[in-house]
Image (cartoon, rainbow, N blue to C red; front, side):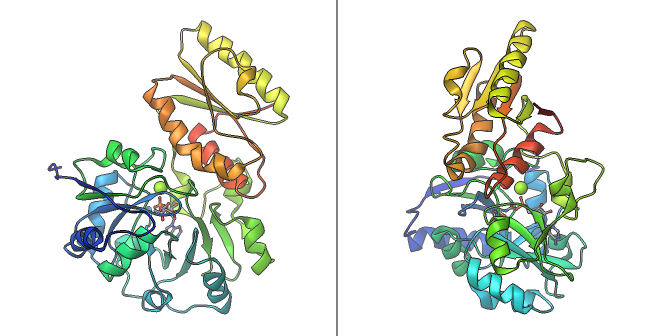
Length: 352
Ligand code: TXA
Ligand code: MG
C-alpha cells in the first residue's frame, strides 16, 4: 500500500472550529479517509455512498470484507433514503436515544453500496452524540461510513494517539477531539426482523432499551460463552480488542478472583513471563507482583468502560506477555464491558 500523508488536527471538542471541520469534510467529499471522535470510540470515516472510498477503509484497517459498516448521520431525515421503511418502534428509539450510542439495523435501500452491508439486506445506522462527529457529517453532507479507527483485531481507540499508532500513513486525516466519553462502542440493535434483537451490547444498556421495548432480546452469542454459536452480527465472530499479550479473564466472587490471579501471577512469573494485572481500585493493593493497572472503582462502571481499551493498550506498551484481568458484574454497561473483555481474552475464561 502506498504511504499516505496523515494530517493531524486538534479541534475544540465542544465547539469545533468551522474551518478545521471543513478541511475534514473536503477530504470526505473527495473520497479520502478521516478519523474523528464520537462519544463511544474514534471512527474511521469515508463517504458512505462512495463505494471506492468505503473500500479504502477495509484496506487501511485490514478489515475482513464480510464485516459490514455503520453509516453515521447527523439528522433523522438522512435515514429514509437509506432504508426500506422505518417502523414505529424504530422511530421511538431514534427519538429517545439519538444522538447517542445506539446503532439500528433496517432493511436497506438500493442507495446503500454493497460493500457497506457486506451483501446483507440490512444496513446499520446511528447518529453519534459528539459535536465534532455531527459537525463533520453535516459539513460533508453525506452519511459517513465509520468503523472503529483501529487496526482490525486491536482494541478500539479512545484517544487520537491510539488512532495514530494504528493508522498513521494509511489515512488522510486524524481529527483530535480528546478522550472519548463512553469508551465502548454503540449497542447494535436489529430492528429489521419480527423481534428487536441486540447483536452487540454497548453504550445503551439492555435495561434502558427494555424501558421502551420490553420484549427486546439478545442474540444467543452474547448470552452464551459458546464459541460454536454463530453470531448474527459478522463483526462479533472475530477475535477482537486483542492486546499483544495473552489475556486471561477471571469471573466469579471477587475474593476468589484476587486469589486466583495471585496464583496465576506467581506461576507465570516463575516461568519468566512479564505479567500484567488488570485490577480495580478496590483490589489493586492486594497484589504485590507484576505490573498492576487499575480500571477505576467498581462503584463506577462508566469509568471502567472509559478506561478499558486504553488500559489494554498500556499493557502492550509495557510489553507484558500475560494479562490477568478481573471481570466485573454484567448489570448495565457491565454487559458491554464483559463482552469486550471476553473477546480480548479470546476464550481464556477462568471461573472461580
Ligand atoms: O460506537 C460505534 O459503533 C463505533 C463508532 C465509530 O461509531 N463504530 C463501530 O463500528 O464500532 P465497527 O465497524 O467497529 O462495528 C460495527 C459492528 C460490527 O460488529 C458489524 O459486524 C456490525 O456492527 N454491523 C454493521 N452492519 C451490520 C449489519 N447490516 N448486520 C449485522 N451487523 C452489522
Ligand atoms: Mg470495531
